[in-house]
Amino acid sequence: MAHISQLVYLVIRYIKDKIIREDFIGFINVHRENFNSNDDEPKMSGTLIGDTVLNILKKCSLNLDNCIGISTDSCATMVGLERGAVTTLQNDLKFAVKCPCFNHALNNSLIKGCKVQSIQNTFGTISEVVAFFNSSAKRTFVLNKYLGHSLYSLCQTRWAEKHDFILQFSTSLVKIVKSLDCISEWSDTVTSSKAHNLSKSLTCCEFIVSLHSISNIFSVTSPISR
Image 1 (cartoon, rainbow, N blue to C red):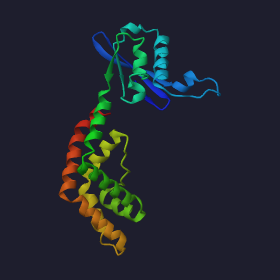
Image 2 (tube, one colour):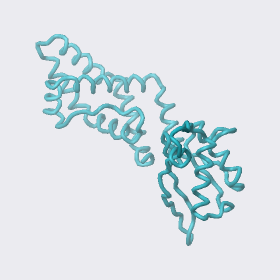
Image 3 (cartoon, one colour):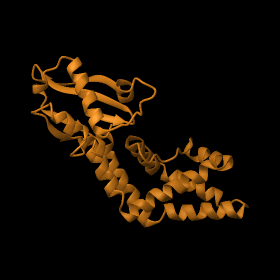
Image 4 (tube, helix red, strand yellow):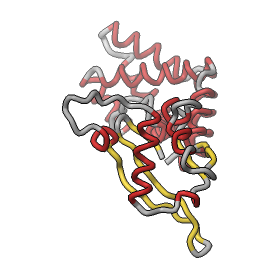
């Protein structure tokens, strides 16, 4: 179970004929389920989410005593001890224990790992390179000539996309450097100087080691996080 703004998506995991199954119940619009009047203030809370999910389970005619686990992300709305959705559900689901979402826990671990200064510097340099090429049609043309395509902005929140981007950037590093070296020969001193500095940043030892470290980790975690 996870939530995005006022939407909650609900999945039921169970065993049938010794086979583990996961069935998608549906997207639940918490506001629509609870606030029929335009005059009501649509306040979102963990208690409201928990009660809404509980009503959906009852509508499905499920035996609530058979529920033994509740898995959600780790935001306060879901796992808060007093008014979290999990706590609200556990009031009726007597045998259900809180089970952390391991995919979410993995992403949180990656976020903490990315607080290492050299890794932060690497992400910052990559963002600079992407912005440098994307801010000019001429520079994009040169990049396309060497790389065959443009570079898209580094996504800060969607980890699956971030995985793909870093892996692509790592394998394309040589061609990206060649593009920068080409631009560093231009007569425009501001642009050529910036390209030269970015090329130096991409070829320094710390950047290369950090980039390959990230790539090696992401090549393992990418299939898991989807």
